[in-house]
Image 1: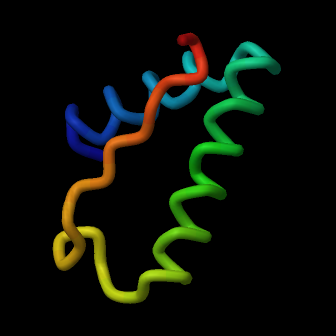
Image 2: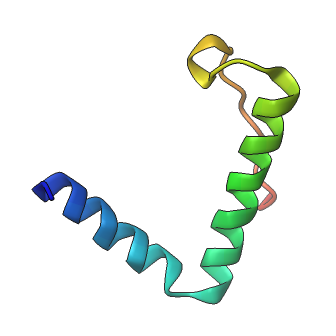
Length: 56
């Protein structure tokens, strides 16, 4: 495993430790998958989409 791969794995582990954070990340990933399925193609082929934050 490369150092970059190991660092990525460590970061993922850190981000998923909190149940609340893990739930937010998984929900965000699901939104991305749904959008990609609705739009089709890869993200490189699509224009950037900017969403407003729920924080206000």
